[in-house]
Length: 286
Image 1 (cartoon, rainbow, N blue to C red):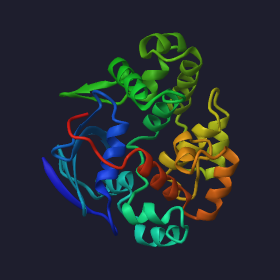
Image 2: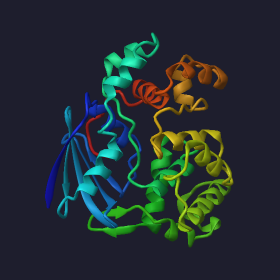
Image 3: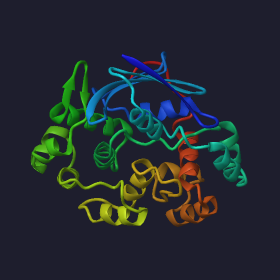
Image 4: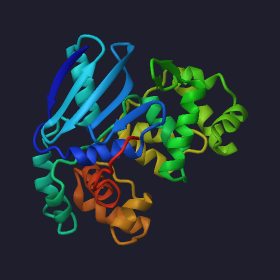
């Protein structure tokens, strides 16, 4: 066991970051203890599944790994939680907008939190389309239990190869998703099993590649640009939570409002989500 301390660059609203992770936590894969402020899961680091425990505080995180920590590990952990970004610069710009100013003042240091793995990001987004977060977590837990790799008391999220071996009909039955969603999930698994990745693509290239997949629409492509690629200047105008936070505006109205927040539209979106859904963590374990 080894421990590394990772401080955030500028303010760090750890309770919002923690609440976001808790809202999306996959049963069996992730364990979040609100009382201890810790997040435990398996994470692919250095080519191997590693047991990771992250403890959150107002200045950053302390991370326990089940092996010696490398500089590559530190970089991956910092990138996942967006700890290296100087949010003071971003929030100074966003505060110029009267709509965002109170959100930024109430929750400085909201971060553009990503996923620990690209396939996990895409798979969970696909099975979470048009369902509640609770349903998405349930579907994710079933997917992990059926195709993931048990490690001690946790499950490592399934590889694309393990999901690709199952046909759409089997995925529909095992996970409990619709036929259309199972076709999309299987197509995603096959594509990533072939070695495809968004990492080296531009935002426009990634969006085109995602939209070319069956069942992937604009909301999914935009959302993954924000959460999987952690692009700083993408908005999701079709997102219902964001539109409600903006006063129940239309998609076009949301897109127009967001134009004023460039080049930090993704961070503006995170503040809207934080205000609407992630403002406070609830006691207990997830």
